[in-house]
Length: 90
Image 1 (tube, rainbow, N blue to C red):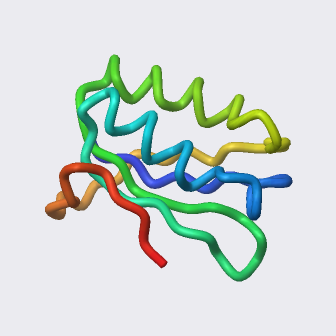
Image 2: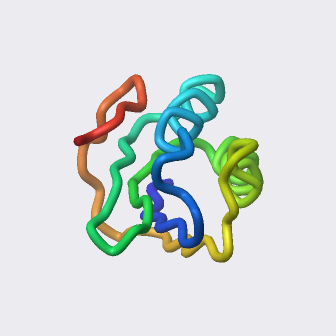
């Protein structure tokens, strides 16, 4: 299963991308994450449903200095090859 996500709130400049990468890699997921000009953090992730549910819960919480106000989480119909291990895009 492949998911597109966007995280809103105080999520830039607080280590959120590194946090997302570490959590996704610990779960063995493929994908990427990056900062967006609008102040959000966005990415795509792929893996088993159980691991994705765990990542979703962790992304909603975020790292210690982040404040997540909303997590958009949308299944993708398109299957593309995502990077493995999960990486940060600049």
